[in-house]
Amino acid sequence: MIQVGAYSDFWPDIHMTPEEGVRAHLDLQSGEASGVLLPIHWGTFNLAPHAWAEPGSG
Image (cartoon, rainbow, N blue to C red):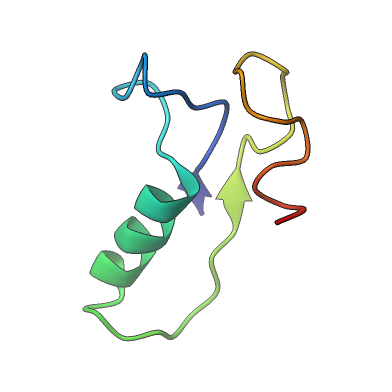
């Protein structure tokens, strides 16, 4: 489980972007694209300037 929540360039230390979440997942898997990534906090609160369904609808 990796937190990927309301994110913005204005507050990079609060939540990871989707890309950072994937990178953290891969880092925890020793670079292997194995295991399951479960993003946590996505779609919980509408706090950021990105679209509500982003990145899930991408």
